[in-house]
Amino acid sequence: TLFQLAGERVVRRLRKQLFAAVLRQEVAFFDAPQSGGLVARLGQDTQIIQAAAGECVSLALSAVVSVTLTMAALLAMSWRLALSVLLVVPVVAGAAGTLGVAGKRAHARYQ
Image 1 (cartoon, rainbow, N blue to C red):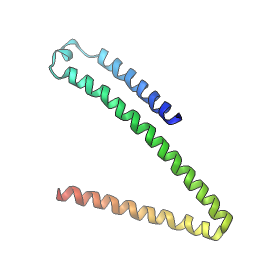
Image 2 (tube, one colour):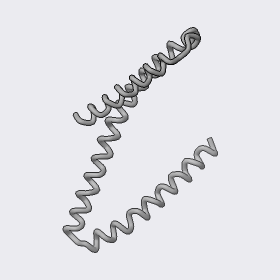
Image 3 (cartoon, rainbow, N blue to C red):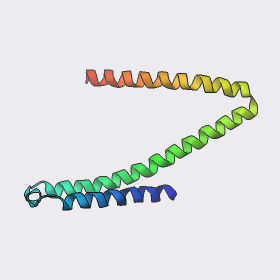
Image 4 (cartoon, helix red, strand yellow):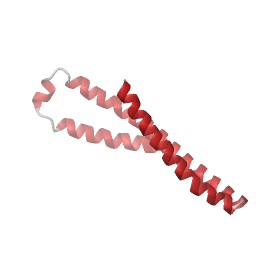
């Protein structure tokens, strides 16, 4: 799909940058015992990034389309209802975000 292609392009660019960065290292870097593990780990992490990039783009596009179609349906039904949704949803989203941050801080404090 298109999202997999985008993820593959991101990974290809990251791998090129990673390879260039490895080539710029001093020879002593490769004498260290963990250098091979580091390079292997970075290679594996690009696969994780590829999966995440494809999924995130897909989810974001799906959310944008869903919101757009929902607002179009609301406008078709009642402009007053659409206006009330446009006024209430940002307030609720802001409150939910604030509570989420407060919950995360409390969780971190008591761990």
